[in-house]
Length: 227
Ligand code: U2P
Image (cartoon, rainbow, N blue to C red):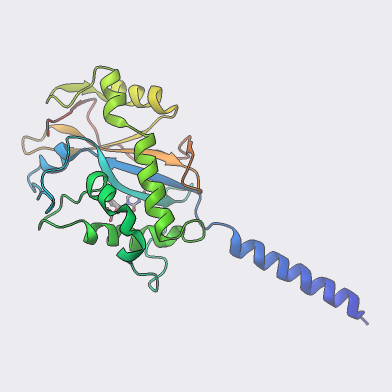
């Protein structure tokens, strides 16, 4: 017969295992994705400036997306955790500047941020609450200054064409890690620089080598459109 002591030990072991499982994060890394507004707007679909006016000619945040090492990703993880703007009121002015929405119709950003929180942020709740999620994303934008990094390599949004390799190398030089580059097409079908992906650890604070780079969809020469 099993002694009371050994049953208790087994129970404690089980409790310990479940606590570890609950506390461990349920994704492998983040993609921190910035977009070039010139390329977002310069397509057949066009764009709408936010209610606050034309954004600065700078890369802006698309999102911070939890990802798995196999290239898949979780989404809409917690329907009970709705976007609550009162939790980020101190961040709104910085979000208007750094995380503007360019989709139509024109908006004040809340719809975009709410979409990003509900689709992606809720999948990182084991690591970050709503305020921490948006704050960490804004901090990453300060850390990864793509426009300056590209400028340092002589790559500017001047409607010129640059090799995909030179853009990728310049960002690698600036951040220490190879980025993912995504292109879209303008109405003349030119491949243009649209989004840049860098990888971040699950605490959302340190850049890491990307376990996997997203497909680039870029030509070998890509345009960096004016904005
Ligand atoms: O690529 C089209 C849209 O799919 C979502 N996406 C893509 C790659 C990835 O690693 N994770 C991910 O979520 C993005 O959706 P959104 O946040 O825009 O709704 C991306 O725009």
